[in-house]
Length: 78
Image (tube, rainbow, N blue to C red; front, side, top):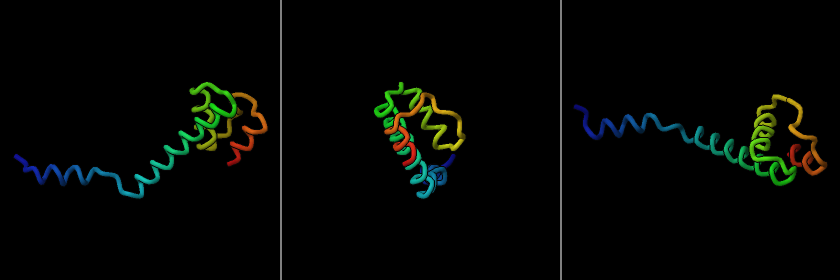
């Protein structure tokens, strides 16, 4: 039967690298900021705002969920 230290080493090996942790954190922050921005600026539903953020961040290039206002266009360009 394995020791406690072996279990600890196994869990340590599963931990993502610090670089990956930072990357995922920044992606999550961009996702949250984009969703909140479209929800607030454009008055989209949270689901539409999330979808718009995904298609913007992934650079898929689908049309907008709704036509953007000038403020929405400026927000998207940043």
